Image (cartoon, rainbow, N blue to C red; front, side, top):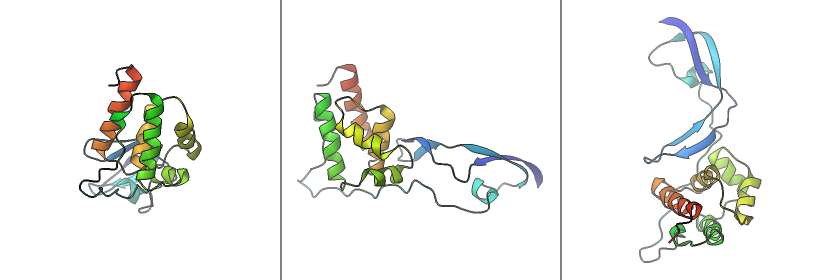
Length: 162
């Protein structure tokens, strides 16, 4: 083993710009810090360099169960023809996912603010892409769900909503 420099997540870092890939994995940006003069081996990871594992601030949303067959009650954002209908679908999706508080949603995703979620659902404008991403992830949406929401968002953004 040799001594080296390592870049590790800051111990109190909270992820920013959280997004979900097609496989359902969450990705985000975190501040890094330099740890000098550490023993680096093939089995060393960021948490061991910091003194052991720590709890992640993003706890994740509980998995949202499917509705019973024939009872497809999940709001469909692709039905939205206007921004107001899209925002209404967002409010309905939050209710469908169990109506967590805005603070709980922020806690689940580890980024954003409760006020940001609240304002987005009261607004008459499309939310920013990052907020929509955090919103869907915080409510337990997977890659397929996020894809539907993004498609509807892009259609309204470009004026091509069907």
